[in-house]
Length: 213
Image 1 (cartoon, one colour):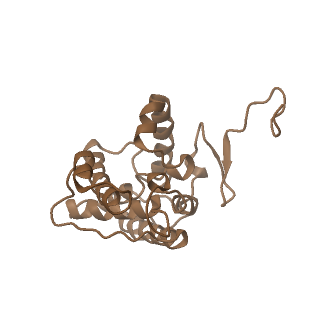
Image 2: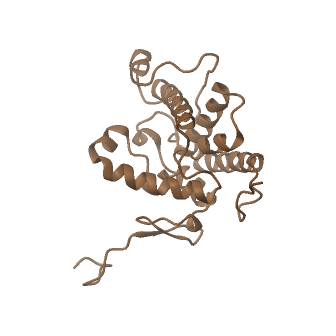
Image 3: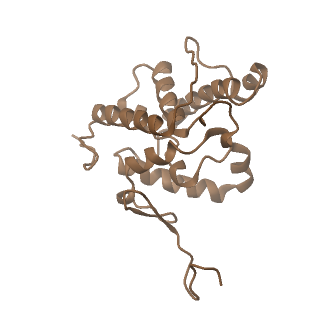
């Protein structure tokens, strides 16, 4: 019998976070989700499975900040709550990691449903609709692919032609020079954007829910 498992008991399905929260991975509760845990985790999750150049990995936290910026470039009048949704678009990866797209496809729908359940809980925790409107999801996906284009060509060894084929051209008028940040810097930047956007969207503090009129 493996160490840590007792006969007749189910394997542990929760993860203890640094905040002290215990997040049930099979039935995540919004009350067990903290932005500090998300920022800490995402700043230590590497994009491209770490197959990038530079002293530091390009983290999901830094990627998320860029995606939110690109969303605002594409649609300057987008509501703060949807910019917040853009910042949180990969937040579930603080628990499940950043699986590359081919691996997600191989795992199939069970993985997607697991990811969706966690994303819904994260959204509810921070006052967003559990399910993002299709038009907003499309906007975030466009920004996500644009960021991936810059990452692919500057960090991951793709040629310009390959990146265009896989991700399409980035939006006109937007350029980006990527300098991967150290984890603590990426974490701080992510938390700062969260505070700015959550305040703009009506979120009072990390311990309170969104206020709806």
